[in-house]
Amino acid sequence: MQPLKYLAGYPPHLQARVHELIAQGRLGAVLADKYRDDHAVRNDGQLYAYVQELKDRHLRKAVPLGKVLYDGKLQVMKHALGTHTAISRMHGGKLKASREIRIASVFRDAPAAFLRMIVVHELAHLKEAEHNKAFYQLCTHMEPDYHQLEFDLRLYLTQLEVQSLASPGRAATNPG
Image (cartoon, rainbow, N blue to C red):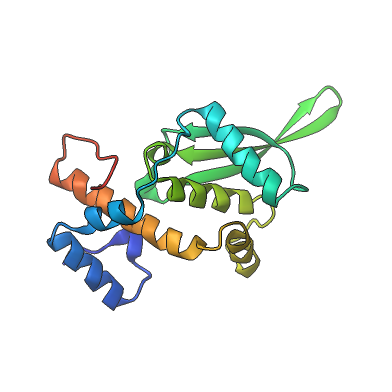
């Protein structure tokens, strides 16, 4: 059995079930059936507005965002689905800080729920730097189904990998 790198920390019985779905060729269909809603967040301007709306709703007092964009250079296979950075620059005699969120381009074509999950994850880093209990509490405050979405996103990434291995010359973007 091929190891499931996105599900490595999950119990063996869950991994076995995922292996069954892959062997039956049904993983993509199961995900497509569960996550039918696409999103209309196609470019960086729309992504900025989307992220800002979530930030305004849940993290009004957090530091302002300087930039939000899709980043084609983020390597999903290296576990970077999004990044958050704080950039400090000297402007005149003052130190100016800017926050930046970059979302992997794979989310441009992912179901709406997965885009929301990764945005919530990156927004939570505005308040909590580490992946600790407070971080995950904030994530579930902003998205009550956060943990299920994170698991299903791992299934989605597994399906994308299965598709790309099945047809190496073609970039897989949407399971199903």
